[in-house]
Image 1 (cartoon, rainbow, N blue to C red):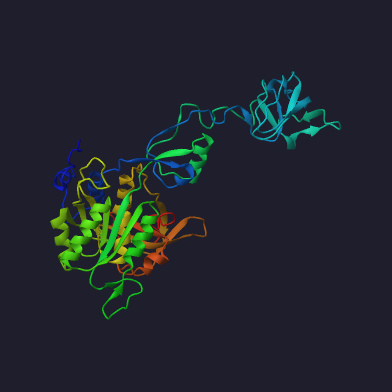
Image 2 (spheres, rainbow, N blue to C red):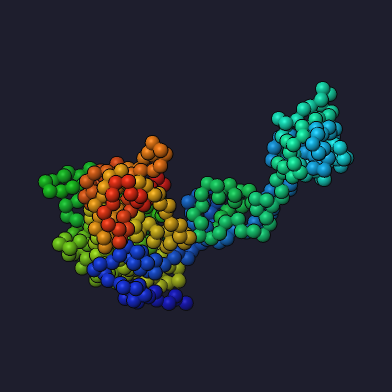
Length: 442
């Protein structure tokens, strides 16, 4: 049975309070996109080592206690807490040894202890471990003296199920799997992991002035940089990429590119052709092939943007149910910095949501501005900044210089976005501002 049709863009717009496509605040654009994007539905089982960076499709429930038994957290001597003398040294007889991967056999009488190694199962009846560096061993190693006050009952013992109890959720669906998660899954004996299939993203640049690397560069032409920054940003998201190159501003070529992209991908990202004053072929073809809106967003840089769906064919790989509502379209500006800003403001989170990932807001730093910053209320600005530590240890930030949307060097030199909010005005030197660090992002 075919799935119900998704809501139209007009229906989505009616749910966004104060929606105005000609003056759209960043927050409203983000809300609209969150309502628009679908989620992948196909689940794959992959080997544990192949799951890094993938999105978990189902909760992983622990079938065992981790650790499986009470065990020692230190190299030392395991004992009964009630054998410890109050306010005086304790003298105990060594009953034997216990090593990791082995169990001490037999009972330990009162007044006795067991030499034990980190990770070894606690012998029955013993509940405390004194680290070996605190213990004074007798000449014949048959007795040990424990100074008063170095341990109390229960110290240095890991309890069964302390890390994870049988029946608990080890990891929740929607998690992007990290190295520590792989270790967690391995500790459960999980050889395979259920993950959502990878999102497929097609991208291309538009414009007659663009040339690919390796081609001659006639006067008035520039090398296409946007596809390389898009490729780098998309690589960080673990999606399958379809690089369709540079498409000339020609209606037939553009229509062919959009149809091909929509038939093979879940999302299509373009750069260029959406600004006022540009050749209108790109916008016209977008509108003819799908349900597309053209926004003017209250932000700097990155004001123009297209959003919507481009029609796909029935039964393509994007929807196994047989009905394909089309690929989601993100038409980004042509200026290099504006491409990166709009990608991180809108596209990144949308693609993660489409991949099945649980929303994880990016962390912000609060930094003191080293210099004044000019800012008009009524728009969100993303200025490129360099974050450093001040002499007093606090974070501080300065902008990279000229903030033009075509100056890609400002992104290369920066290590974070200074995010100045919609209602915010000019910033004085020393005033705290929000900074979105690039580390782990770009």
